[in-house]
Image (cartoon, rainbow, N blue to C red; front, side, top):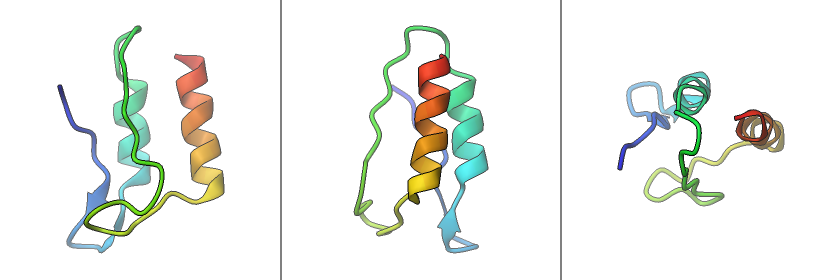
Length: 61
C-alpha cells in the first residue's frame, strides 16, 4: 500500500498537480482508493473539474 500527495500543510491547499502525477505514474492494474468528499482531517475537497480530470486520467490507465 502506498499514499499519494494530497494536501500541502504549509500552503494550506490541495496538491492537485502532484496528486495527478502520482496517479499517472501507477503501473497498470493498480487499485486506487480515493476519498470523495469531506477529506478527514483537512476538509479539502476536489472541485467538479478536478474530479473530471482525475477520472479522465483513471480511465486512460
